[in-house]
Image 1: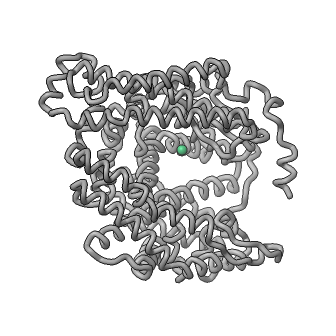
Image 2: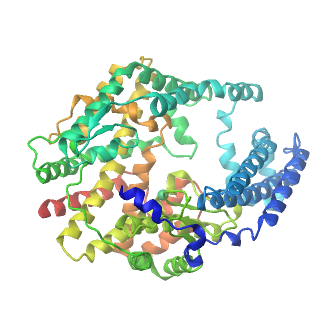
Image 3: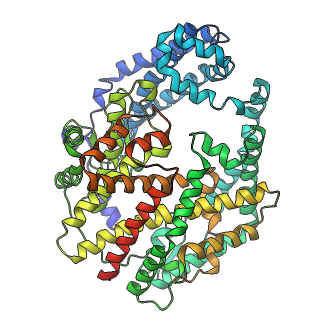
Length: 603
Ligand SMILES: [Zn+2]
């Protein structure tokens, strides 16, 4: 009912004061200028075929082909990004949908028309290429970029084989598609009683909210209802996962990698030791998690803490009621340890319409930071006067300032940053803001609420994602050793990991064994560990910033300014964290232990 009332009150976009909207007009002042870029891209992508089968002929041709490709992508990303954000601000506008469709099709065209470039670069003789740098001086700029391509030369197959593999793509993606259909469209869960005794059907969308219910009977019914249903399909789920794993193992093998994990991590030049160190460090800090679970058990006053007791809040909700202007001030104060240069840009962002602040009719939900090399680093919010909303400002501003500094200090080709470091800047900001707020709370209720917020981030981002990462590694090693992946194997392995990660203070219910079937991330091919490493790196960096001040801030800003001019592990080293060692994760988890102690005294 509350939600419905709120929807009626929503404003139309035109009624929102312009200073609280983003300034998309700074990208294109009208549809005509946008159309002009579309036309330009169309023409240039047709002309691009002039480089076909000629890329390796001379240094000048290679340089020109790279430059023209960059120009094409630079323009098409403006065209696409503008259309995307225009649609997001009011998804009901048909014209915006038409713009996006047009932008998408031209984007695909650019990809197609330039697709021969990398394979042709890979055919250039390495010694020949070395000479090229002297022949065309502009090529030096592309050295890191070209080396990154050539690094994978030994894993690229012949044109004929690559072609065959590409055509097989539709077939080998079937397990993932079948999983997605089964898991989101076809599976149906039972009807249970909600807190008011009314019938409610469990869905993928309401499962977590049901698990947060204060009524233990509701949580238990949702937990059992959902997982018993999964249990009924366990063999199908096991086969789809196994099929997807076989695809990745096959691809790693034919591309001459030692293992599927090596094949995946090598994309970003990340050593497997980073993955292993993460798991090792978390294992060494299990004790803090066990103590945290003990606090939860006491706070809930239950004799046994079950798996369905992990999501319900253990502290009283505090309504901070922070209007946007106040939220902005809080973020500025919270991030002040990052010093003048950073804060000046932050204020500039607030003052020059980077942010689309309020919800309006038809606006896309959620929040993101987006933009292009040429645009402002825009932010979409749906600001709600809550503490979460304030953290969202800090988070998205982290992304936007990372983009701002990278773009301002790097040429186009290195102006972005890799997935491995993508969440570092956003998390550093959240952590600094939390630290500030913890130091400035009004009472114990607020302190408890903030502490709990922090600890839950650690639990879900570091411990849980590392558990997922360990599971992934174990099941792939098992399959790569020639064993068959069965539902029983997956469930036994998963349950044992839950016992290890949650410890003696939690009853690991049998039902949790099948949770692996619910998690889509196991189809992402060694992706989730980056949530844990990124979070740990960020916590480690924010601790350095708070303790070492100026030197640490300078290192950190250099990291923000370096974009993708070097490999992710190296730019993080520049910032002050060496992810090839156990230290950053250990440091982050040391802080977790300290916060658990604090919470322990308050509960
Ligand atoms: Zn983010």
